[in-house]
Length: 559
Ligand SMILES: NC(=O)C1=CN([C@@H]2O[C@H](COP(=O)(O)OP(=O)(O)OC[C@H]3O[C@@H](n4cnc5c(N)ncnc54)[C@H](OP(=O)(O)O)[C@@H]3O)[C@@H](O)[C@H]2O)[C@@H](O)CC1
Ligand SMILES: Nc1ncnc2c1ncn2[C@@H]1O[C@H](COP(=O)(O)OP(=O)(O)O)[C@@H](O)[C@H]1O
Image (cartoon, rainbow, N blue to C red; front, side, top):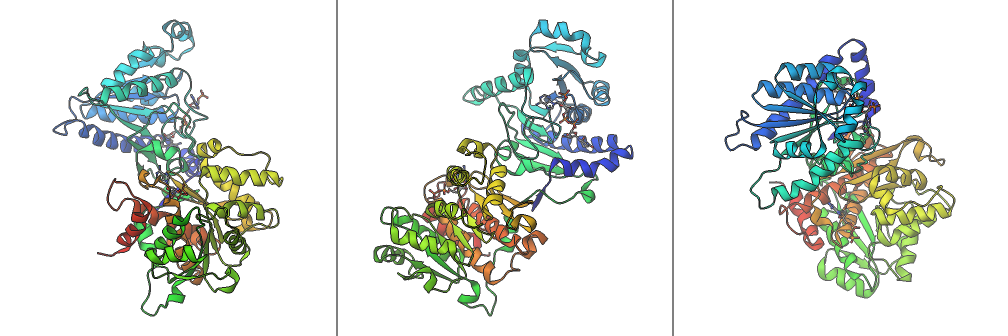
């Protein structure tokens, strides 16, 4: 589990140590960790893994993030790496700069236009003014010919994205990098980010362009929210958390990230005395004449994920198709109020079919927990005009569907403005949290990183005020971006909900937050985690959703 913290939480943990005069010590520890990862990355670039003869370019901002970079540069110098720092701000961390100079590093200062830099020279502190100016084109060439580029421009102190000459530099470097790697025999440098890829928000994961996409990021004390949610996660690369001595002082995590081992350890497995009912019966309302495949895929996934029983409600054609693929499914044309289940899944493929739409409505109103997917989302959003849904109802939109939900909420006067799909893609965690707050439901927002927001404590009350429990799941194969993989996810999610409905403490091992109202978000994250694992069973290869459903069983098969 990665417990990702807000910037304020990390700063609060650091403050007593800074007050005690230990700031330099913290920075030195951070820089040692950064230098270790830089060494590892540099060794990847040479045939014999030697450091001598390698070159590193540091992009150094005006704050402590730049200070970390400069100290790390001094440690790399001591290991024989040729280091050049390019100062991007009008100030610099003086001790770090002195350390790099003393270790024999070169220092340049980025200028937008030579004459502008010249005119402003008088305003610069001596340490910065003493560095030779370097233009954007020249700095791009330096970076492109280095073995390693360290991004230490902005960390947790960033407000917004990169600006000015350093923004130009990063954009120009990215324009040049692909042509450099492709077919020319030239390598592209490894990129390591210090704490955060510069410009990524540590709190929201917003990642305004231009950005220096990292192969690896080294962060300090704790992962930050921006590392574990989109779009920040997609530019972070491999994440290393370096302990700096603040770990015992950290407050609550802002986002819990489930990793593969958490999913496998927490996945409900039957005990010796379990019955099909005690394991959880999942009722499914899915499919319509125009989308029959959805019913097949979600039931197949639920069967493979280990539901105690799957009960499918639909017409005779849909029932025949479901049974042809999964004879284990119990099919009928009952109404939801006629059958006894632990949880519901409603909505996959339910489009333009009045009898299935009526069943969906009944599921929304039912007391049982439910996954409300695809064709159930509009009806669920409309129902919020009458009453909040509750965290046991799990909405599973992608960004486009969430935008549609906000349109309904806006129509009811529950939010100030409609929210575009692009807004949601730029800040998925924020909008998932907002949707959870307004609907009262657990919201699982799909995408490259899946985020889950669920109202707990005060936020679960009728007013919706208060914080949400937030989780994220990553490492899914991008091959999942194919029609039907959402149906498979829905079946898996339904299976966990049915189990948790019968065993409220089933997921408590994940953490205290997974008890009480938090169990629904935990169940949603567990389902998304299994889906992600199933997407990679055969490595990086296409995963048609029907194969994905089969893969689920392979993931759960113990060696
Ligand atoms: N605290 C600790 O104990 C430890 C902290 N550590 C390290 O410190 C880092 C945080 O350091 P920090 O607070 O100095 O912030 P940082 O990210 O370097 O930015 C500073 C300056 O950048 C500027 N600026 C802002 N936005 C901008 C933009 N969009 N475009 C351009 N410029 C922009 C702004 O300056 P201004 O523009 O106001 O002059 C701001 O003051 C943290 O990430 C970690 O690496 C570690 O050593 C471990 C111990
Ligand atoms: N680039 C990506 N990387 C990883 N997972 C992805 C990516 N794009 C989509 N997914 C996942 O694939 C699934 C797609 O679901 P959805 O859009 O509802 O598809 P459908 O409705 O066609 O079944 C979701 O679980 C989503 O998180």
